[in-house]
Length: 401
Ligand SMILES: *Cc1c(COP(=O)(O)O)cnc(C)c1O
Image (cartoon, rainbow, N blue to C red):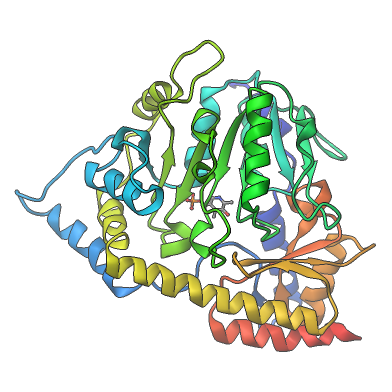
């Protein structure tokens, strides 16, 4: 029979979320009377709000008419690309610098094709798993060792450094994944910190893939929502973003990626032209129905709904955070992001996960699953129905003893 891609065998066994699901199933089987509440996964729970939903319905209906029908939209509907540039980037990007995708995660995976297996990858530690696992899949990283994947530079983000890493270890001509507001820590880099990041990338001739999937959760107006608010970023950064978390499009699938025309490889070739080529080769564009929903989301009524939905989840985050603080558990995040990062010093993340599951019947995410520096942390997600979050917060009081 055919042989397996050796890169796949390098991926760490027991990927985080299947392992959590397995432990949840086992607990539920042993305690059939228990009512488990999940504050574990980063999946949205609330319905799409009416104006945006109408956009999706209309988009679908149009496809059933002669006048409204459309086929492949390649790099995305022109109107949507222009509207994204206007709403999020003060029209700083031409429509052919905005690429519509079926989601940020999918684009993060495809973007790796631009740099090949020889690229040196740097991540914040802890980080969203696709940055490292995607690197393993294309052969840019080796097998799992005790402290992470071989060949990846992990930059610890800890309480000591205010969850912003020491950038001096970024390799020359490397690829840096940076996520702010951060999943899992909920930390948001400020303007000075992102300026430092851009400077470091320019000095090292490195490229930043900036993941801004939670930018619409930023409430502090001083905090940057995009890497392109920083001077110099157009020559060293790509930004990925998504409708998943702000508009509840996790199941609809719609995102975008900004690739500035100023961005050049070491040899002077255009990254933008290559990205267009990659998208045309292995991706045929996002659904026209999703894009109609995206257009509705970016109209004034839709933007109000984005605000309302993200406010709702931030309200959950506030409840979770104060429940943890009342217990004296140190935590960050939750103000400008839907995640709370809680510290249980000296303890193993999976042990704490098990304790919370057993004592409170609440599913969380063990921080160690996001990287070595996540050890002793637990991530609480604010994606949940309000009544579930309230009930979970009450149950967390049982951790007191
Ligand atoms: C949820 C999430 C995304 C969004 O992925 P989609 O594929 O657009 O649903 C991207 N980055 C991070 C860090 C996320 O948590």
